[in-house]
Length: 289
Image (cartoon, rainbow, N blue to C red; front, side):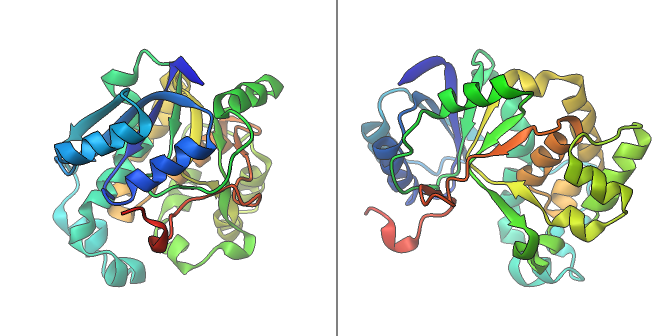
C-alpha cells in the first residue's frame, strides 16, 4: 500500500546487501512508499541503481551526501584516537570515520533534509535489515493505532541491550552519556517521564541506565516530532558535547533517551525479532548475488 504522506529512508554503504534487503522487504512488508537512498559519495553506479529500481519500483531516489566533522572537535579527540577505550583501540580504526558520520546523520540530520519535509511519516531501516517472514500488518497502520493509545515518539522493531544483554562494547560506545544525560536533566530542570530512566536517575544507578534497553534500526516516526522545541533543546545539547564523534554515541541511544525523557511510553517495541519476523543484520550467506 502506497501512502503519499509517507517516505522510507535508508542510509546505505553496503552495496552488495541492499538488493537482498529490499527483495525481502518487498516480499514480506505491505508498505510501499517513496524510497530515498542516501550514500556518502557516489558508491552506487547506474547499473546497481537500476537493479534497485527494478526490485522496488520507480519511486526511488539516490541522494549523495558529503559529511564533515564538526570544526570544534580536534582530531586528537575523535573516537578512533581514544586509545584508552578498548573498543576504539581494537575495533575502530580511522577508516571507520563514515560510521561516525552515519551516527550524526541518522540522529538528526536526516529529519532536516529538504526532500522529505512534505511527508508526514518517515520509516527508516538499515541496508542490511533482514525481513525474514511476512509481518502480517502494515507498518504505518500499526503506528497509527499505537499513537491513538497515548503519546508516541517512535515505533520500533525490537529493543536490544536489556538486562544481561548489556556488555562491555555497549559501555565503551557510551562513554560520558550517563553523565551528559544527568547534566542535561539538571540544567533544564526536567524530571524524566519514563519510569526506568527516572529510577536510574533517582538511584544514581549508571548500570541500570545502560541496561534499560534501546531501540533498534527499523523505526517509524511522525516527522513533526522533530520540530518540537524539546527535540531542538535535546539535540543542541548533544551536538555541543561532540559525543557522536568523540564517543561514538549512536542514533538509537540519542532517540531513545529523548523518548524516555519527554514521554511516559514514547518508544514502543513491536517485538519483531522475538516473533522471528525480522532481524537487524542479514547473514552473509543469504546475500543474493
